[in-house]
Structure formats: C-alpha cells, structure tokens
Length: 338
Image (tube, rainbow, N blue to C red):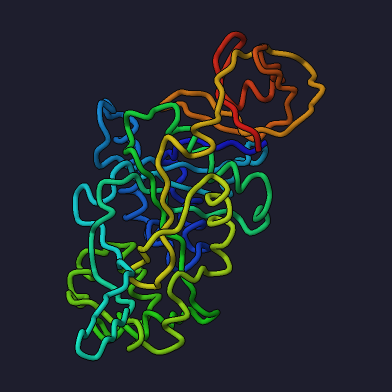
C-alpha cells in the first residue's frame, strides 16, 4: 500500500535519489543533501507552528510504499509565496499604442517582471516515480495536499497557485531561456535552475531586465515556449486543471511555463470533500475509488482506497487501511472521489 505522509529526517537518502531523477525545472527539489536536510527541518518546523495564520511555512510530503519502505514520490505546499522574499514571475499582457492622425491602434504582447503572485499559497515540488505516472497514485501525490489544506484552512491563503515546468529539449536546453535569461547570466538553463534550487531565484530575478520585453522581438522558438508545458509536466497540469485551476497571464521567469490559479474555496477536492466516521470491517464490497485522509497535522496520512461509500452512513475500512491512515474505529476521515 502507498501512503502520503510528512517527510522525516530518515527520508534524506531516498529523497536525494528522487531529486536526482526529478525533471529539470523542479527547483524546489535540489540534488544536494545539505539543502534537502534544511528543507526537511523547515518542514518539521512548519508542522510544529501554531498555524493561527498562513506565513512562511513549507509542508513537505513523501509518498511511501509501505511494503518495502521505499519512497516513490514527493510534493510540497508553501503556505505563502513571497513571504520572506519576492516571488517573481513574468506577466504576459498586451501593450496598446495608438495614433489618432493615422487612425491606427496596435497591441503588442509584452512580458514584465513582477511579484504580483506573492501572498498566494504555492503547490510545488511534484515528482513521482516513472512507473507510477498516470496512475491513481499521481492523483494521491498531488490532490492529497488539497485535502490537507481542506483540513487546516487557516494555515493557507485564499488563493492557490502552481508553476508548471516549461518546455526544454532532451538535452536540457530551453529556447526561452536561451533567448532571454542567458543573455543576462551566461548560464545554461539547467545550471540556472540548479542554482535556484540551491539558493533562491531572487538573486537571479533581480538581474533580469526591469523593463517590458516585447514578445515579437524574441525568436519564434522562444515565443512558442510561452505557456508551453514540458511533456513530463503534463500530468501535473492535467490533475490540477480537473481540480478547477486555470491558466492566467503569468508565466515562469526562466522557462515560460504556465502558472495555474484557483480560489481555495472553489478547488474541487476542497469544496467536495466529505468527513465521515470510520467503521472497521474485515472485508469491503468496493463500489468506487476514493482519496482518503485523516485530518491530523503531524500525523497526516492519505491513501487511495476502494470503498463502499454511502452518504450519511459510517465508512467501512479494512484493518490495513486503518493502519495506513493511523485511525481507529469511530475516528473521522476525509474523502473525495478519485
């Protein structure tokens, strides 16, 4: 059985292996034991915080195969993007110029450096073992974070965003980065993303051009990258799009990948999740597949389960499910349809 839970210090060696296998552009998962150790410690501090309001907390989760104690994925929630430092993006909007004498009005798309998205909750760090891509466990890894937000809403903002990794080729080259960022840093895309993972993107963002960049002046290859998703990032996009997230006028600073946005209260897994009482039962006549979690903080657990859910009635769970969720008879759990 696979279960999502908060990260622990003993996860570090396996977490570093996940980092080595992760997609270029997932900067929140650096292949560096010291940085990962800091992230684990920061996550533990976040779970220990009083949670009276959303602040700089980062909640780091891992997906564990309980049968062999192997980590097969990870994901995160940053409670407030831009809390400690500006959260930079590129705003993609039209600039309109007009001439009354010539009776001409012309709109030109332009990219402007901004930190408009600071203050929103940020989903990040999504990575899953290749063998589990496009399985229910990808849904678990991504959407269980939303069940955690549903259970602990006071810890998070009124809107949630996520950046989807933009296009780069098999050699790790990003046409958008080559046309823009590389001129200011003289660094390959993969190296720039690596530095962001080890430190922060603020020091790079502050060296980016402060004036609008007119899109038609970029190469066609770079223009084609704006809002384009890396093939390996498509699943993360699809899952959240089904949750009600939408693209907006913001793109990633380095690879031009799209940013998704949703009002927290309108997200499907938050708005439609139900809390029910557990009834321990040896066998279940399963009629549907669900995401299931407890509402704990430090002991948060989430699984995929085949259940016979009847609204208004207690929910039968097998002993194995109860053990994975760390709940007993009569406890409350949260579920949403898969």
